[in-house]
Length: 217
Image 1 (cartoon, rainbow, N blue to C red):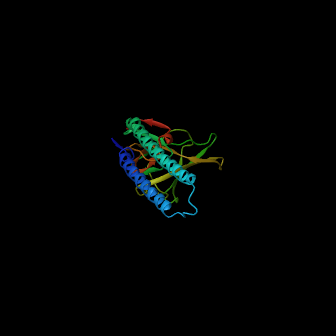
Image 2 (image 1 turned 90 degrees about the vertical axis):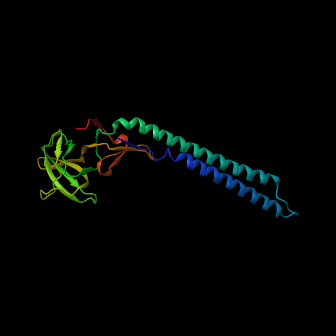
Image 3 (image 1 turned 180 degrees about the vertical axis):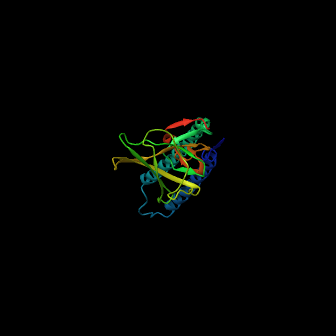
C-alpha cells in the first residue's frame, strides 16, 4: 500500500519562502518610499494623502498574499485527509472508463450495449488514437474478459488502450460509448487538484470517476 503526499509535506517550506519574500518586498517598498521623499520637488511636495494611498495599497497586497498562503496550506491539509480516507481503497479493483493497461493479463470489462442491439463491437485504440482492434462481443450487459488481441489476432503490445463500444441493430449502428473496466488501485496520490488514484501502467483518475469497487481476485 502506498500513499504519496505531494502537498502537505511541502507547505511549511513554501510558507517560509513566501514570508521571506514579503519581508524583502516591504524593505524594498520602504527604500523606494524614502527615495521618493528625499527626491521630491520642494516647491511642489507630494501630498501626504498620496503616501497613505501607497501604504494602504501595499498593505492590501500583503494581506492578500498571506490569505492565499493560508488557503494553500488548508488545501494541502484537506488533500492529506482525503488520501487517508481513500487509503482502504488501495489493493481493491476499481471500475471506471479510464484507459485500460494491457500486459497480456485478461481484463474484466463491463460493456453496456444499447437496449435493442443485436450486435456489439469492441473498438480498441492505442495511445495515438489509432484503431488497433475490432472485436465482436455478446450484445448484453455482462462481464467480458478482454485478452488484448489485435486485428490480426496477435497479442497487442504492452501499453494503455482506450476502449469504446458500438451497438448495432439489424446492421445499423444505433449507439457508441465508452467501456468500463476493472483495474487494481496501486497507490493514492494528492496534488493541486485533490487526491488521485493510480492504476497499473500509471493510469491516473479522480475518485469520482470510479463507479464501483470490488475486492482484488
